[in-house]
Amino acid sequence: MDLSRNRPGGPYDHLPEVGTFTLSSEDIADGEVLPMTHVHGSAGGEDLSPQLSWSGFPAETRSFAITCFDPDAPTHSGWWHWAVVNIPVSVTSLPRGAGAPDGSGMPPGAVQFRTDYGTAGYGGAAPPPGDHDHRYFFAVHALDVDHLDLSPDTPVAIVGFNLTAHTLARGVLVATFAH
Image (cartoon, rainbow, N blue to C red; front, top):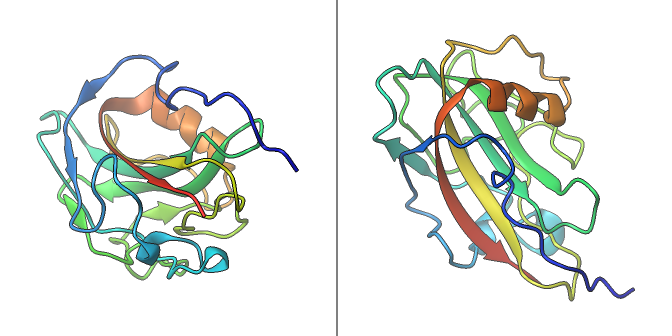
């Protein structure tokens, strides 16, 4: 199958403009290839979420959300790899593997949602073999509410809609992967 197609812009290009802050990681670097540790098991990886740290967010931030999205997937809607909300404002980092499906690595009260793999928690990169590099947008969203009243069964598109309505600022790292 030929997967040739135009590459879309970034997932935040068409959303309302918000402030930015610093997102860093001991595991991934902006613009670099995603290490196999963070690649899906079906593509030979370990399927662990990367370590993330953030700073410089607005003083009025009341909670955080984290997402990982691939706009380059050969679908009409990209591919959601991770979505979590209700991270307390006192939490400014997560260790590698915090996105475990059972939620054991998340702070109390955090809610992880089913990704496009159909399971909760982080699902690593797994673009179709032979496809061009895919971009993985890891984002921490500084929110203007203490929590979002969403259940773990909420579709990620609705999670994204709620994030758009409550995001004050966003820190983003973009890694790539192809196999």
